[in-house]
Length: 360
Ligand code: SF4
Image 1 (cartoon, rainbow, N blue to C red):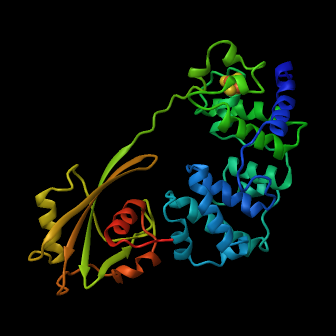
Image 2 (image 1 turned 120 degrees about the vertical axis):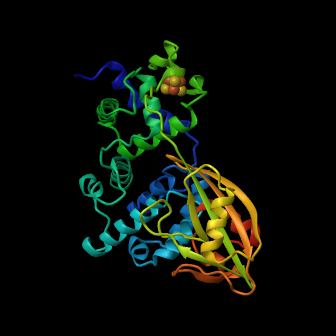
Image 3 (image 1 turned 90 degrees about the vertical axis):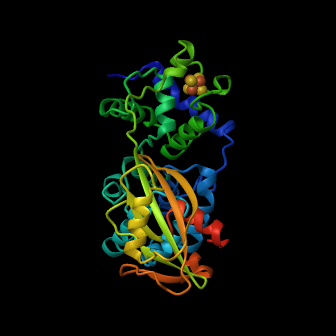
């Protein structure tokens, strides 16, 4: 299929806006170091820019190069990541950094095809690194880009289907062609974030308004079209925080579930919806030898992950005489040293509040 006149005008209008009106400031903008671009993109997946910024600064300060990250201790990196959630991002980043250090002489790969082979680097991140660091013509396609393109060109194929994704990818490749890749990609993402917003786009300030079919045909509120609903599983976690002389007991989670390798107090997952179930509580008390100790419910927190809604209920047990019999693998940690460990978000919130420790 040839290029339409709207497609031909798109890039020039977008870049003129970028040069004259785009005021979006981000610390990683115009960054050319592929490692730092990668870091910013990994941090920004599922995280807002304002929330991600302090993490970006901490990571680039502590691990300024991919070699430094590759040589870091897992627990130190997880602790720095603490609060961002989605720990798989962090685990994959470490894995990829070590691959680069060991198999690629410590140098970031310089082509899209090599980048996309690395753990945790998908087409979006590979395109971002390839275009921003090396000015290669790969379009980045994130939620902002889906929105701008589906509205501007009235694409009604659902963007969360293979065919919809491919339609947008073909169009984006056509649009970026002949334009400076890094500037083009930055401009379209910024336009989506600041002008073509999901609920209330500011069409009067949009450089694409003369081309935009959605704006002319009153399709803004229905585009982009998505068909899939996310299935959410509800899970119910019980935690027993056993206190002993200003210490509590924690252990490292296994790696076959969410929050792999993070720390937590004694944990039990209830099959039923009720984490206050007397029968469950007394079974746990029996198994941990807590029967003569007072078990107090001290808090309940809910956390939404992409596919899971987790309710965590925290029980605190004071055990001055060390009666609790915990399974192997538990550490007795001073409450003043809890900041040396990485915890899942809800556990961290609970412990921080209860023991007033600072984790940064
Ligand atoms: S004119 Fe409005 S709907 Fe169209 S791309 Fe611009 S901001 Fe989005």
